[in-house]
Image (cartoon, rainbow, N blue to C red; front, side):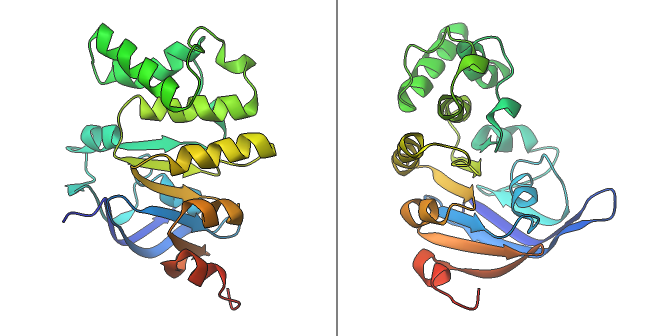
Length: 227
């Protein structure tokens, strides 16, 4: 069976010469929920941005059997939903409906299909009836849910989340965990929230200075005193 993600010897350096990833190789099975942990600057966010081609490094990347290339980039981006750490980077339209509809419109869906996709996505994040609200007037927890809805509206097979629980109060954090655990898609979650990883992820990948230092079952990695 084809994996959701297959990465071989991926390396990446920013324009200022900072090397962010060193020879990273990783496979993620379809349906897996994988936590990506490590200190600030370990390469977690840089790694995530390679999964839908926002960044391009040296090495091989295959997403659901498709090589990440210019020829396949549109199909890959419709299969990979990336939720940014800062929801204000994802929400930029006047209303919630327009934010959630942005992806389906760019997929050239028909008007009724777009409306259905928006309605379905808002229901999936437990925010029906928010379509006419202004995104910038929402609470942080609500913005995070709408950010996830902007991804779900495109029907992705892989959901990628960068620090999804940061700055959330306990109630919104519990809601986020329930939302994540209720999704059957393949999920990759970069976070410092070890408790969220314990509750949502069956596997953990530990990054250190741009390299994968550990990869295994969640409790096995988290209980490794040497790490």
